[in-house]
Image (cartoon, rainbow, N blue to C red; front, side, top):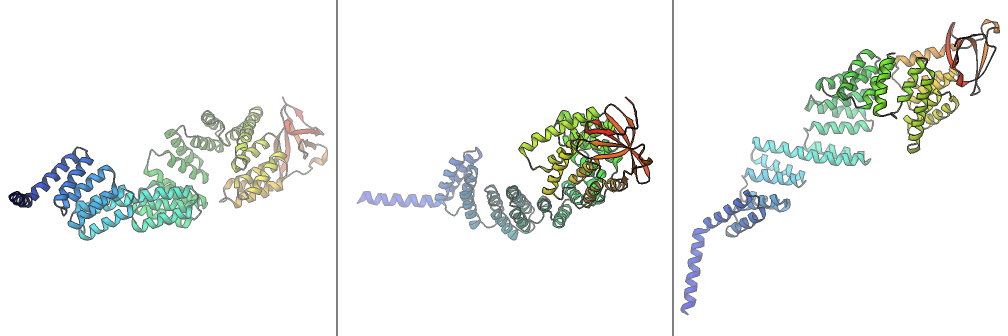
Length: 499
């Protein structure tokens, strides 16, 4: 009986002691938890915080410490639950809101993070730290959304990608990157009106967003408004003096307006900044070629040959230059290289429009005009709006002395263009092209070609590899060069041989 009484007295003393020392015991375990947490021992810290909470389950500091320990362990859901308990006990804890929002963001629960920030702002309007947290959460939310949107877009689910980004902009409306991305999605689907609207919103949020200017430039190229294309290309280039792509775009925009001299200067800058970019080197070489600067063009094309010897159109471009320089043997060798490269690529990608067009062009350069026309006719059947195919067809038709077909092909190319001057000039030249029998027939020769066609005219000169034939352009005469490898026979020669 006495022993039982002593135990009751001891229990009462212990209970009184614990009640009096409760705060000190809680503080001991809480501080112990902090000690472990500072030393990156979250497991041990969690045990100490749990002991503190056993002493005082209403300790908001204990719940906050336990949440921090869970968060350090990567257990974000348990951490969020403890942060919520912290806020339930102490709703004015800014650190509680901040940490809960950050934890949700880390867990990829971005909408929950934004809702937490919204609650924090309602209780603490104008707080700079919470406003910064809101911006950080929006940024994390947008990064996650844009990553998901890109996955959908690359998987061919463009409508889902559009919807995802548009909904995200309702929640976080001040993201220039998201507006640009939305503009890109619209651009890719051919919706240039909405694309332009989104890009202008991006620029209103960030006037120095160079990529938005670049995409606007591309929109106006697609719309064949080359002046506006040039305007936006200049804006993009002005923002970054070391952006090779901006100078390349600017050079191309000037080329579309046939302002070749200025275009060459900017394209040279692009190549100087990124000398190993094959696209820039090819563009510069082509500008030199179109400006009749053949020596410089050959030098650039040779650089490209060292970088990527099967670059599309490289050898056709070189062959054209050598033809202009009357170096037929070298031209034939280049056309042959292009044709061979195209055949190899077509085995892997038989429907590629660019490769088929380059192949037809190379065959035409080799004198295989019938086969070239067969290839380009098939290409046009499959891609009736492929402008470059009509330009190639016009060239082939002219070689076959079918001026009317050449004019029709050029007219179609013009309908698919913005009326570039060179196309108008070609149509004018081809429209006046005729081969009347002048000189009473006495001085007229008949040139029969291997592909079955024939041509009448005056042979002015003959060389070992070619002839110079006088033809007539309207009321005036002109001369055309034809190579012997495409000629079957010549009847009624009236020329003198020049070797």
